[in-house]
Length: 130
Image 1 (tube, rainbow, N blue to C red):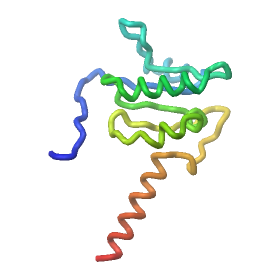
Image 2 (cartoon, rainbow, N blue to C red):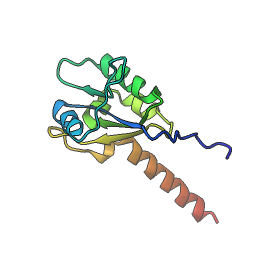
Image 3 (cartoon, rainbow, N blue to C red):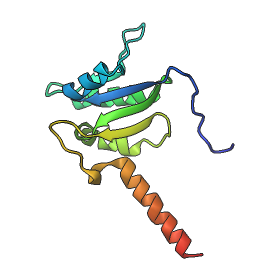
């Protein structure tokens, strides 16, 4: 089909995580963690020593890796690199913003939710014209 993105069907697709230590640890305990032969991980633990540049680099790496299907990012971390998150428009890997223990979820800052709202408002305007 023209215009559709090719979604890899590899059975070993990974979930990447960019979040605080508690959130990443929880996902690692659930079995999400991976370290490849080059010692590359599929997670970044963000603390007060992590620079915005490191977060940007991890986001860019995770969104370009062929073996990652979903990138989970804590919303407060996503706010630090909002221009990258909002500018990302590929279907795979999907970017999902999640809450963290110390920072509650704010739907007003969620880029996926704002895109869905935009699509539904555009559809409702189009359906009113019929």
